[in-house]
Structures are given as C-alpha cells and as structure tokens.
Amino acid sequence: MQMLRSYLFLLWLYGWMAIVGVLYLPTLVMPRVVTLKAIGFYGEIIRFGLHWICGIRTEIRGREHVVPGPAIYAGKHHCMLDVFIPFIATREPCHILKKELAWTPFLGWYAMSTGMIAIDRAGTTKTLKAMVEAARKRAAQKRTIVIFPEGTRRDPNAAPDYQPAGISAMNKALGVPIIPVATNAGLCWPARGTRFKPGLIVYEVLPAIPGGLDRKALMARLENDLETASNRLIAEGRAVQAAKAAP
Image 1 (spheres, helix red, strand yellow):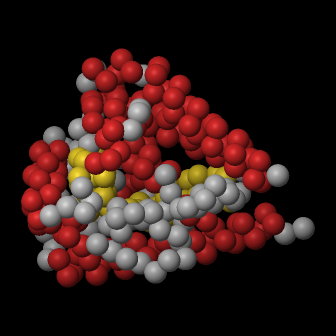
Image 2 (spheres, helix red, strand yellow):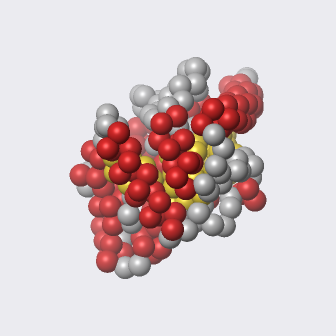
C-alpha cells in the first residue's frame, strides 16, 4: 500500500510541477521576488502532498535564527525537498546548483530567471572564483546564498563527507553569517529510490555561525553543529516511525 502511495505522490510532485510551471510563466518577466514566491508556493504544495498522500508531516523549527540580511544557508542534503525549504524559510534564496539543471524544463527556467548560480561541480579553480564572484553580487542584493556543503544527496546513515572548498571560499569573500540547517528528511524521502515512509520530517535552523572564521575553525564548527542536530532529529524521526509501525 505504501508503495502505491509513493507512486501517487510522484505523480503529484511532477504533475504540480508542470501545472505551477505553466501557470506562473508570466512571473519570469516580473520582479524576482514574485518568481521566488511562486517557487515557495510549489514547495508548500509538495509539503501538502507528502502529508495527504504519504502520511509524512513536515516541520520547520528555529526560524528565529534566520538573519534578515545577506547570509549563507548551509544545509544537510537528503532529498529533493531540501531544495525548496529555503524558499519557505528564508528571504530571497539563491541556490548554488549544478549547471545541468539550468537546462531542465520549469526548474531550470525559474532558477535562471531568479539569478541562481549554476556551476560545473567538476570544475577548476576558475569555476570556484566565478562562483564566489557571483555569490558576492547576490549577497550585495541582500540575498541568502544556499549551498549544501556535502555537495550531493546523502543517506541519513552515511558518514559525513563535507567539501570545504566552496563554502570556505564564500565565507572568506563575503564575511556574512552562516546559517546551518539540520534535517532528518532522508528517513521519509530517500536520497535514491521511490519508497516514501510515513513519519515526521524536521528542518531545524540552528544559531548562525559568524562570518569570517578561518577555514579549519569554520568547517569544524559547521560539521559539529549540523551532525549533532541532524543525529538528534534522526533519532527523533525513527521514534516517530517506530510508534506508527507498532500494532
């Protein structure tokens, strides 16, 4: 039965992506904030579908830690939902994304029209410099730069694998607060595969890390904050799933 629910949710996910993508096409020539709100609206549709179809509730905690000015959002990355949470929880997010996504229907169109930063993940020092310069320009617009420090989706059971180059370079260049965001999303929405499991997905915005720390200090604190909070949320999520599965 849960597998059927999973397939129904995928129809919901991509069906609404097409509907919203077409209905909101006029926003592509409107001010950026309008288009960002359209993306956030689609994010709320995803959350509703998760609850209604799959029995997965979602909760965003710690919104009081979101800073009002420019910042770097550094989150754990378990699943596709992670991409949309910044549009709900932060001000004018700007994602660092792989350049291949810029060519995908709907997602790519909206990403490029809102000034997201597309990069070659296997790029060179030149790519890193271009990313940092683009991030500097977005920060000057008081936007929140969104990056996933591990680079790609990972299973909640996987050992941490932080890639310091991108986030440490932006930290050095921008000097803005870094907002760690922990999650347990992978317990319900798998990094790979299509089987969604009922439970509670939590995104927890943690206290900001001051900008300008040296690379070693930054990565040590970021990893400690994210892993400690995410492990706690994972344990909490497993308890919820166990309670649901109990006879």
